Length: 494
Image 1 (cartoon, rainbow, N blue to C red):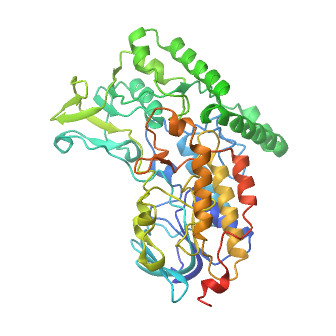
Image 2: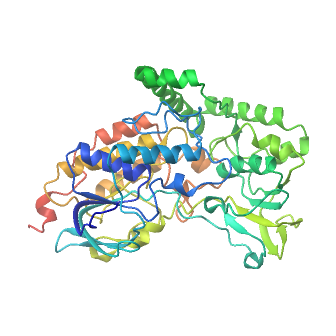
Image 3: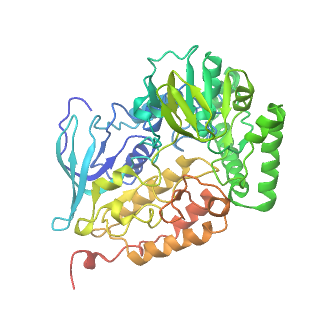
């Protein structure tokens, strides 16, 4: 924000200016709250879509579902939007909504002041100091801090080395020997692009993924013009995409018939694109469909089967100069090393910075895995709302749908409050038990794999919502305020 003075007191402080932060700001405005500040540690809005610029970066949710309900975009280039398009979209929404975040302004700490009934937020970067806020919204995202595996000798690798979410565009990969660690969502987009660019890729695969056809295509000029001229048609398309997403939940969550059918599609896709039986076997998962994130690609298998890529079907365990040593003890030389190894998702980095009642940190409260009520509010942390936090992710539909539901819930709770909002610990425990019961028999828990949805400290499903988006909406609709302790008790009245 230019030409304005950084505020020192607001009703609501929002940390993060990605989908969640912008969605929260819009929800507050619609609920009549205008005293808020959006703090963003980066140099622009966009969050994940600002940070991830690796070759081939795109969304695997259909573009017309991956956006705010109030801001349909008839101009998406295709069924699946490129990363740069999504960043442009978020910048345009912020401009239309007149949301001006305080950029380059990280939250260094946030402490609940029980005597004053407010949050004291210490800021750094471009606007160092303290911001007081009645309420704090953590819209920091769950895919923000890269996860780098602990590999012997890594510090001695002499060439360029970076995570996929911190792509070094100054490195020319044409003709280079590139080691890629990981075969998840980023790698399946990245590997075909590097193969096309002339790199010689060694791909380290700890565990193969279930991959189904992407079936992406570009929208024609005629289609985009029709979407722009007829908002109702665009609305119908969004509704159809939503229903298709909801139907996918069955195959991801353990329904036997749906899972078997989806598994067959994935195996047929693999067989059609990989002729070599040994390579096909190495790319075939041995765990339940849906246990890990199901990936979409029409290009990954052909790239892996090409002369440009060597699949090493074991993890990278050691680096000896330019030589990479796999768990199989196979050795490969590399000029560049890229980590497509995901993020610190189950243990959110911001949790160490936030302290609630009695100075207890959010990280300490979540030491056995993230917990909440309504996937949004947390006992012991008054007037705190967490978007994209505990059990708010999806494996079958658009996460933006969940974010908008959470933002609406938070805005409504703040609008009707009669004092400080304190979550009843019993309400959080009951909600957590609901999650555990719903997750117990799903592939995420019982499917025979390790995944980033589950907190390894407790074995609990802490990231995914174990239901449909419709079920989440229904659950929030039942939240009538009784999840909060009474205002008189909040204020210390006997």
